[in-house]
Image 1 (cartoon, rainbow over the protein chains, first blue to last red):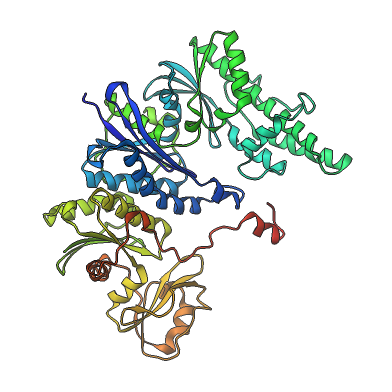
Image 2 (image 1 turned 90 degrees about the vertical axis):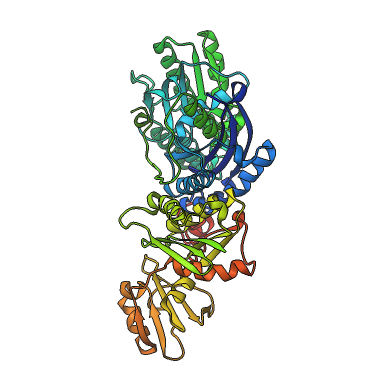
Length: 348
Length: 225
């Protein structure tokens, strides 16, 4: 198969990402550009879907121009346009899909609708030290918490997932309880660095459930109870108490993620673990995983930090890899987004 | 001059090809979302006319107000098609297009905005008198004199509005909906005058701009953060 140049467009939530990936010479990311809406949504205390859609439509063209300029490529060299078809916010997805399908129609090239989670799963392949198939993947973000057995592009077996809140969602909600501004996850992690271990001992949900599923909504409730107890017994929390709670929360969530991930790797008989998604940028998670995996001779792979959160590079990559392994493209034209799209359906 | 016009602000979508004043109008199939039908319809119509995208001099789209999703489908598709061939875009107001489509001289346009409101505007000789607004039927501003043509499905959705306007209206076109034909007719002279925008600057005209409350606003109302 001749080398291909694939444009990737991501717009499933509050980040607009555009990237160009070439399959020439083993594959390379030629350029990528991102606009995050985090500041815009901050005033609202969370992502407002309608505002997200309104912003995406203002970003696609400037980001594409930047990517073309940075890569030195011309539009005419593009062989296919990949875009996130789902899951995500319907209106936000629709903007990326409309732009991608129209661009491809006008260029006379096919499109590759990509599953957002497949993009995350494959994102560590963009790093300088990529994993090889097969591997176990822990996907942890604001919208997802899953363990998957990945044997190749398009071959994903779901091993376990959260039964309620996603890990990143639990971070953000708990941060809100502690009075941290949206998106509080990273701020909570920073606060936890100043917390003392074991001052606040929180439950480890489903640690011994015997399966690879997660549950994080109870942790948030446990934190709420602790906050109320502290306030009842001595007034508002001081900085150290808040840090201790943040530490207790992060330790609990990290322990569950680490133990279940390593169990999944051991059960599979594999030696590689891939961690993707925004929570994969959490330093404590990385510290614990690296330390414990090393003891079991398991190699842990992370995407570059900039590719942990949503981005266009992983969509261009997923599109390119799908094309390379002969997956069917779709003639540009009609499109439909899939706001709810279980990864399991991708396999069928 | 060859111009493509896209209009999907409501369920009644259409596209039009303007070729030196001659208009080829095609309706989007009903009952299917515009995302499924719009681009295939455009490709088929271009082929029917023997035109490629590189043969166009510009792309117009119904910019709004209307269904937020419909407006973004039109705008996103227009951006994508235009960017590939470095074409200018001409955003056209949905109510402006309806006023033109009605054929009236002095026109009141009332398009159902859902949520108990109408997109509402006055036009005289094709020029909007004041800004298009979104109003509850009970407070939409009334004209100062009679002899208006009133059009749009807001008249059907809100009988109260119909009743308030009745003393001032001499002709009714409640069935009139936005059409790409009117979008094309408004856009062609604008394009000729150089009144176009770069695809990066093309955005829908939502009119309904307050879509969420900030944390500060919720707290000020005694709500939760």
